[in-house]
Image 1: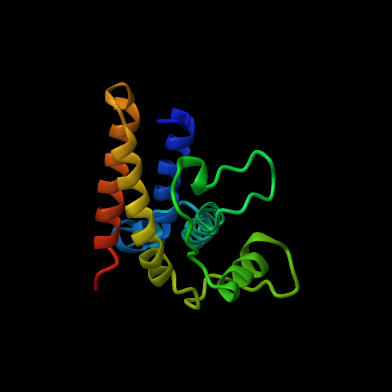
Image 2 (image 1 turned 135 degrees about the horizontal axis):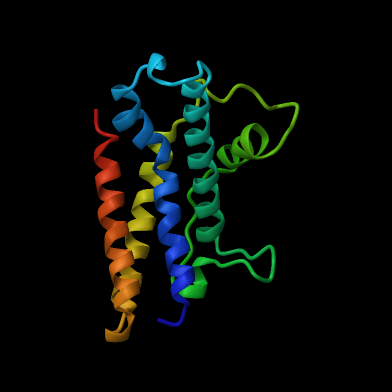
Length: 166
């Protein structure tokens, strides 16, 4: 592969961050109750941390797939020889920027269910899955570490998507 192993690992590890809110909501949160945590606000803090992390990681992938470098050291999809595609609408990106990524007057308590996180992940999953398969196909015999990382990420993405089903 022409890209460094570290770049592949960062791209792959960001997938788990994208899915953190869904994993928390579907797999971990139902097994806990607020009394099991030592401080009453921890439950909400973990929920907000997972939601914020997921939304920012989705925005990061939107930047990656848009194929537009804003800084010289940005890593984007074309650096891997792959074609760009957009994930977020302009309005969704604006909402994440205004309500999550920056302190603004539009900021609100993002814990409410106004985020269509399941829909965002489903829209991301198609291009992401195709990109990961493309990466895996680019691996040579010497790229066994990258190949393993990529195939494990595909498995993780698929298992996370199962959590989105009702």
